[in-house]
Image (cartoon, rainbow, N blue to C red; front, side, top):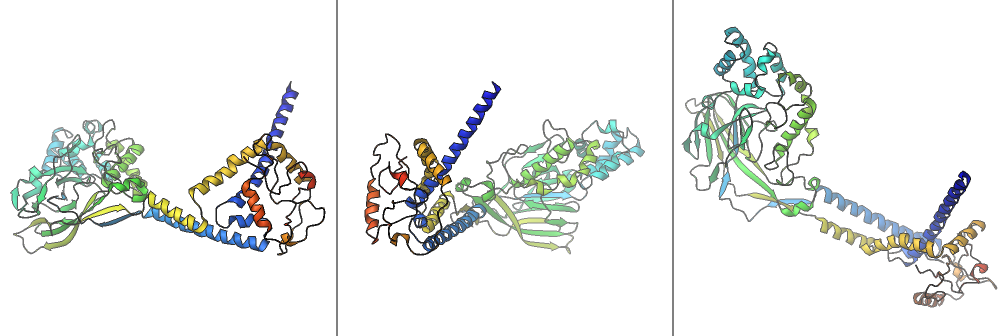
Length: 563
């Protein structure tokens, strides 16, 4: 039983090997057929029988040069399509009736209130002990400006505080116990040249920059969460003044950016204000939007993301570059330390980092803040940038201090990014180049696939026995001698009694095939037209097919295979 199974397995392998051998012979035949009948420029002259080797080599060089040139141009077009398929220009059909004023963030150098921090510690952590309250208060004050740079110092200050009392509240809640109030941050404010209550328009925010107060911010912070604010403040062209003026109460850093963005460590302060200074900032607005045609391109090609294209888990309202970068840092912190840092937006079902987690955050702070791990964050396809065109600092007027943020001119310019080179343009360019250099089209590609798949397989199925016989004869016959002379063999004299031969393999038509043994019309025309070009009968290399092979076949010197 086992021996029969082994014999059956051996027979099956031999059949598979024989099928591969005759399939290879069928591919060789189809290759010659393809070269003779192909519509690609110059290809048929390479395989045409009777041509001198020098002429074949010449056409091979021409065809190769055309193919290489077409490939180089196509690759350059593909590179252009991948790297620079869009163009940015001025949007002429645009006029602003109203403009959203930029978000203006004021971060006091000392973001804590000492009396407030002392009172909170005295009643809770110090248990009404004045000495302990004086010892614990610096920890609470440091939490108001907590970030990755000073988190190690916060850990050291917390070592003297009992852990059970410290863990009664989250770190974020302790920070809110001692932060500076809005009334202590500002003296007065004006918007559109009209007096406004500062604390009704400047909202508290807690980020990597510590405690700050923001005008026209997207969110405001509480001890438990970040809350989305209402509609932003607009300016109109008819307003008396396109400006915001405020007087800080102490040394502060001031940030100016678009209302679309989410404030964090990605922003740097444009103004360092100190007491007895008057700072006048003249800004201009640069808005760029992308047309919907760019959606056909990948994010990597257009290098921007539409606001509704990617939904962030922690900032689902709309995509922006700053919110993506902040979520990336949050994800790394949660992955490495299993908690969310207190100066980030609180997340449901994710624990907030406690004092015991500060060692982990300090250890991995370089990894968490490394922007190279956030390469998936691209700029928004619709973005607004505020540039500082003029910055004036006046220090010799102690009676007139403050910060003035004002538009230099009314924004009347908008930029539009649109597709310069899309998929249709790429297809047309590829087709034109391939047709110019090679005469190639989509149907030429289909033809190549047809010749070397369907046609070759059909030949193995219909003419299997003949392919066996041809393969067997080729094995037994020695290879033909190579004649390197440039003289045409078709001009040599045909020996008496010699049988005609063909460079193309002769394959007997399948049994029962319609039209078997009858020359096709185009073959007759080809034979009648070409034989008049030579004075003597055309004699082609034998390649192992003698007169005995052709006795039972039609005397035609052309292939008779019809798949």
